[in-house]
Amino acid sequence: MNINNEQEAHAAVAGWLNDPIKAQLRNLQLAIEKMELAQMYYEQKGNVQGVERLRNCLNILAARKAEIDQELL
Image (cartoon, rainbow, N blue to C red; front, side, top):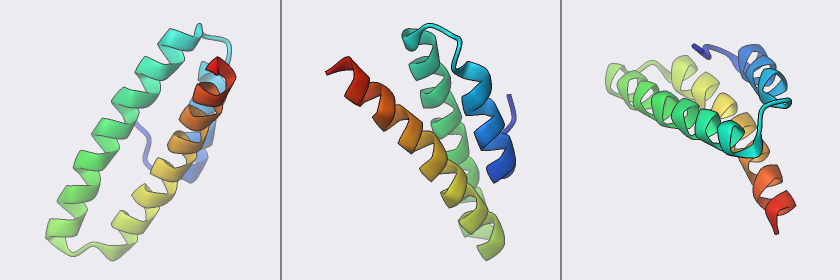
């Protein structure tokens, strides 16, 4: 799933809620890695808006990952 903005990040997280925890973690990790690479690309191009948008998306995904990690404790 491509995540290009905050709304899509929220939709992705919502779509994964019914998946098993391991699948959710895998999907979150893959999405985070992909977005980090995209963020580096935007940084190199000097696209401040793109960097900020991806930072917000990464925060959304990281928050869900932290929720799952907390549940597993």
